[in-house]
Image (cartoon, rainbow, N blue to C red; front, side, top):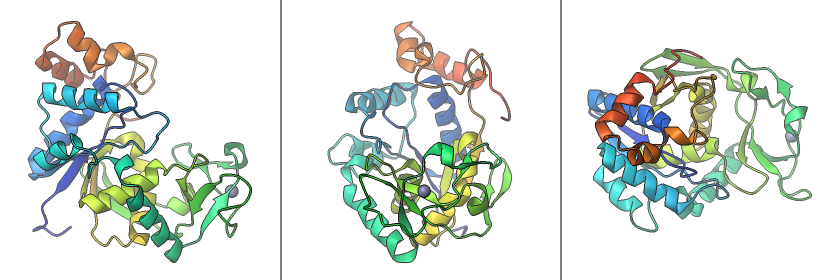
Length: 284
Ligand SMILES: [Zn+2]
């Protein structure tokens, strides 16, 4: 990372539900790290999953962020209120198609028919490892197939502000990366790499559950032509009393529900600071 390059980070919710307390804790972390490093904060709508994302949730998320006082870079905010927006994934099919074509020029991108149960159970985070069974197969065999990209078998090193150096062996731990699913939708792993590169994001702040994805995302980015390194900050998540990651299913923990109960923005932020009603687990 060159010292003269300004930091750009992002808050990138998926509009598949209301903003909840887990998002608020995450936003606190994003804006705090950004303040410390004098970074620009972009907002991006990660709506690559077209079956679950809704425009009404996007509007509600933006309204709640406003109410809580999380101010993004004005350009990304203004863009999100227009259509098409540079910061809404579904408005840019060409961006991902171009990146997919680029990937095909530099590595084996193949059609995969394997189901989850055919994969190996291994990896430090319990994720199943894809053993490369379908390498070399065409993308357009019968029906819609998962498109996988072969990634190099090398170690990656990314600096994390909260966890120290992240040393990964993506090929050994997870195997080749799925870039398009059976419904023809681009995957999270692929979109996030394409968008971070497009938006010049060089500071990635996110929940610790995504830390194991850092290495394969760096390998994908490099295959797409990225030369600028990025640094990360993977923070602890909020958990429910029974140990689940706080999610959109937990209705009572949505900002909307808290507003309806008469809580102030300060009270909602204080609840997120406290780790919600249930508390924060430091490490998984
Ligand atoms: Zn396969």
